[in-house]
Image (cartoon, rainbow, N blue to C red):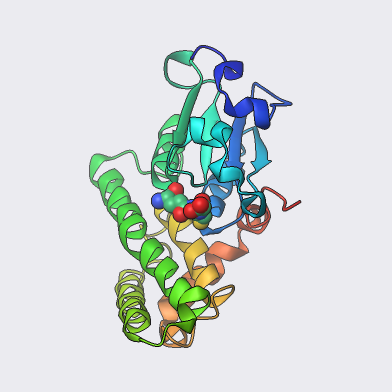
Length: 234
Ligand SMILES: N[C@@H](CCC(=O)N[C@@H](CS)C(=O)NCC(=O)O)C(=O)O
């Protein structure tokens, strides 16, 4: 596609600023990762609210960009080769934006792939396991008589937090002194586990001192403070 207007999603969510990155999202943990990056990098972008209450993510317009019916998704009007480029999956978006801007991802190959390793740890571990724990602890799954699914995800999240705690021993952020996309991918899940999911006690968060210290530092960043409310809920 050669122009932003060629993307059918723009019919439902018209661009007021077609020169800016178009963000289709909601401030959930996966959505916040991307708004956190955009705010940190100071990129010009236009947020569009994808309202789950109206099943916006299931509309043909949304599915034309992300057939997987999940936020976040973006279109960069100035993508590779100067052409508009749509991309979804929060981890892929973070890598894309980091490489585009040269920020929040080390340039040296070892540092770069180690950061991606921790990003993938979040994408395949901390995120999905926490999401399942949320379902079995806070949402419909909490009514299930069989507690084994809850216990399984609780124990797995507990284990993952232990791994993160160990990694953060003697390190300010996951990669050391520098805040990277690995941190941006992970702290929004800590926020949801202890906040919305009310699961902190179940996963022994209070004993994970390094995680707690790191989480406070990530959340205190001005970009994080803004990101947690972007796009503003209607
Ligand atoms: N692996 C995906 C997961 C995205 C995801 O699960 N998004 C949720 C909100 S946090 C969603 O859009 N759910 C809507 C639905 O499943 O219909 C990513 O990281 O982008």
